[in-house]
Length: 580
Image (cartoon, rainbow, N blue to C red):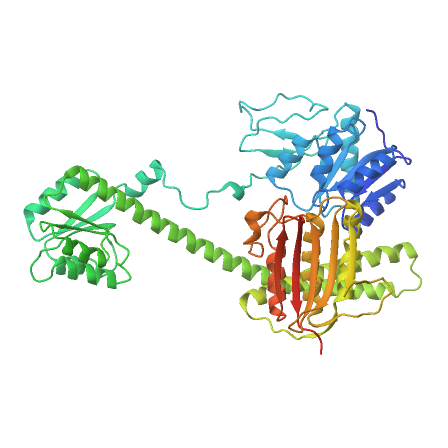
């Protein structure tokens, strides 16, 4: 397929964010490309391609509702008519696994936000240069030199083929002659495949028990000699002949043993008293204690275990049994200690992340406010052309959206910490929901959903006056219903149904029921509102319903979900106090 860029070339710009579509189109216009059509998601883009056979280049965002950019790319490459179209993927962040996924799907190139007109032009030139050489999928997966899976140094095939990918995968777009080498992306860890907890492998067990310190406490030197002889080849062993000496050796809290072999029957202070004192001291409470005694008495065994001992062996100890039990308890103890360290690090990282997010969000409000204020001032200039005013308005709208996100982020943090102070006011939920539906109109239209918005059985028309007032916070309500309706639209199948019904409950509270076609999967119903729970949605964070519950409760309301398998539908019901 031969394509050359000229003033008549038709572009398709796909992005669910209107301001971003306008920005890309303005950039194309400034380069002289005036023939541009646009779509708000991948599904709408496919219809545009069918209706506009002269589209020559597709520029698409990655993350979009209804159909994402990567799904659109795969569909284009699988389509007989469109498979030769160059596709430029725009993304706000670029991770190693995403580069691999897009390259295997046949992307022509990447453009990372934010970008300049020159950056966009360079990417288009590069794609056109590749097309002249017959390369549609121009993104290369470069493996380390000498790797058995490394591909030969030749042009990428027109039809993408998934190659084995080594761990040190890097992204290197094809370079034009004389162009400076592109900086390679460093390897990034993909935490999605990390084990949920510490896995005790043979290698880890060997490292944890290697040369561990063992303290033997026995008043009979001959017994000490036997035990030291059993263990000294594998561990560092030291011994004392009394309970008092054992406690004294650990009093400073330094050079503590990893495990203690403790005789029960000793003069002055028996093993039970030594164990009791060890477990009462936070510095030594975590050290595993194995009792060794010649007394084979069930009551003694129970008493020792109740004091916190991990095991109990009778003398004379079998060398093999002793060795295995010492190794097992050392492994478990040190694995537990390792998990505690990891949990402490994770907790500290969480606190640090929350502090950074809170400070960042707070500090962002000043520059965002400056953008909004200066934009408003410039828009008041009557001598400015309408074209420039349109661009300034887009800047202002974007800044307001960003400010909304920052404010909500700060509010959610305060709500989670129990620090949020609600200042309720009268809110018209009909208008709030209408605003959300308007913003989701593209996704609703793309899926051809039938939407009803009714009060007491009467369908509400656009011109109807406000009729359903509740007490709450408008920003919180907007975000809450935005999340709930967004989930409903995404979960509903094509040509499904979405209904919003306003009623007054028996308790005199306002009730808003949002029903969509499609029942929530059974395995997530019990945890539907829990943090990070998601199902069937690629890229879902599991925070939408979680935040919706937080926002409902902080406004003295509630939220619940009911799935009906027979009707194949899901209803999320929100209750809020009515405005008296």
